[in-house]
Image 1 (cartoon, rainbow, N blue to C red):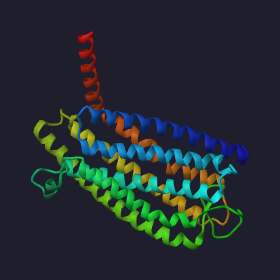
Image 2 (cartoon, rainbow, N blue to C red):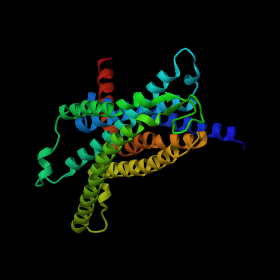
Image 3 (tube, helix red, strand yellow):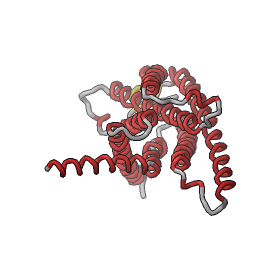
Image 4 (cartoon, rainbow, N blue to C red):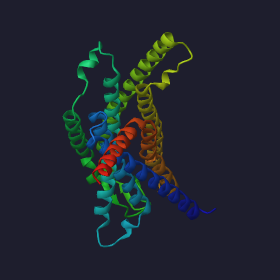
Length: 311
């Protein structure tokens, strides 16, 4: 198989991955919107999950445009403008995916904290704090990537030294790249550290809960039958998945940044890995959110029965 054939295979794999991710995130979005409209579930968590699903839909669509490169070959719009819009939007969505997942982990920590702990005083009971947090995170993320508008350009010459290649058409200028990388690194270290603390805290509480259930009911009753236990496990799986893919994404980004020439195959692999969390996260959440699905089904069933009675 020659190089062009391998590239076509990688792009086809990404389109399959992106299509599945967009479909799964759309289902997650509709499901939780219906749950909010019907008044079921925890509103702060549902709003955060809706924000995460929207972020991943836009992220996957943006990466699909970057991978296809068809829009970048249109001559009506200058190449620099197209690169700045798409790359900046991609970086904003990637940052929002990180911080929104972090907020989800903190929310889960507050939810499962024992009533006697100091964290119980910070439990979020209304949607207003989450809406304010989402707005703040948008402003923070856009402020951090503002330098991206300066350093993103269309590739004038693929052999120009110092360029960090995004795809075969867009790249970063080395002149401004240091400031951008420093800001992104500080943001990622802070939120990844907060997620790591949340993972450790959730794992400790799960272990204590498991030991408590075993001491009360013996080995015949598994603590995994608890809905709270399943919901917490889904968040723990989500955080572990994000951490693994983030590390792989960072390693590939570092490798690409040290290359002296553009490698489309490596860039394609990086795009598939970087978008993996956007596809996997809704699948994990949809599998564990059976309770929300049951609430929506029950509400629609009641409405259908009411309509049939009136008819």
